[in-house]
Image 1: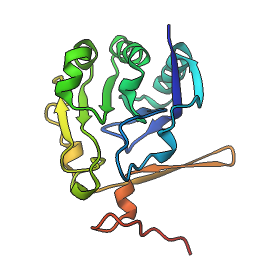
Image 2 (image 1 turned 135 degrees about the vertical axis):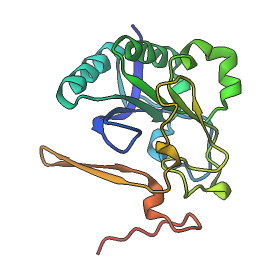
Image 3 (image 1 turned 30 degrees about the vertical axis):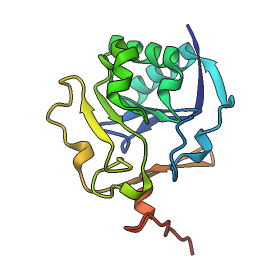
Length: 198
């Protein structure tokens, strides 16, 4: 059992892929995409540094409470923590949960070293975020260079990421608020942040 450095997680989300999903944001990234929407997750520093079996407990709890369909893994960069990533993906296969993973690396490069992990990921969204190629036509996809790889047949007919709309989800729990969603909701066509609270 390895450890995982998590920036944050949600036990249930309906906007991070098809169905209700458990979402893990891995802490740390070295790719350095200009305009990254998850700046707080870039630092290579411990945030929630825990054994993967604690995450497995929360996943099972979410499966029971929220009937989750699967996990969405993003960051930061999940492939910077390959041991933890492999354990989570293997656990999902065992529990019949789907896996969607976002990475700033290219699929072809990952295939050389992480073919076993990739074979168990249902959808991989690959490639660095490139601000000048901002994509406002595909849900959750940051820039036009990023590709949606359907690596298994589980979502072969699913067009979730090709949908031209974005969503924001707000959750309230014990006087705490969590806001999650696609940053494009708040951007204009030039990628400028236009959200204002009056």
